[in-house]
Length: 343
Image (cartoon, rainbow, N blue to C red):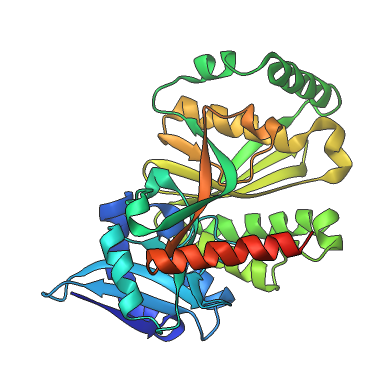
């Protein structure tokens, strides 16, 4: 059994079928680990330094795959651009990950597995393999399978229910024809995505240069992802209209069990009606009533407002694997010295 390290930009497409096979076995075809999503990350955001590491058994059967890139101070870490909520890592066991040190440069002292989601991972937190765990954020999800919408909504906080009722009544008073429209047909994705970009370009994200645009790198990435997922009916754009005016839009991808909210934008001139929250309310209601998915995943650094919508909250962590216990001790001592010198 051995690891092979290949330039990801040149080689990932040749391994997409195997990547999706492992994703299906280990992670139930998680959308964020789907090769359509990962290949987009590589195409638009990787450098020539990003490596595709593949682990084969004696029969040349792939058992693990992970994207890595070198960092400072003798480390390698999982390739994780801002657009990836979790690391593109399909790793079956700690033992396989530990063996990776034998194939990386001898100067590599530790591996960083960034944005590690225990809910969808085979790795376990254990001191046996010289791990260190760091909290990254708390994300949220909504359990659809074990609830109905009435029960779900009754269990939300009094404040949330009052606010949504107030927003609905206020919007209906001035815009009686308000409605949600869902686009998931391949031919409708382009026009819906263009409307998303146009709406976001009018807001604060445009002022700081992070808005999606049809021609910029972020825009090309998200459109390609949505277009590729829509071929198998696994992409949807949820739009919310007040009369004939688009006031909120949400980009999503999915598999048979899970809906993932990727990005949301809204008309800031209509913020008094909280169009983003209303769209979320109607989206959740639609998913519950049509029994489409088992869960809605948000993959966000959840605020208290967002947590009030959730049925589950969990940690996303960074996991550090050291080459051996001596190196771990030395690095931790150096970190303490550096921290003390900063004061």
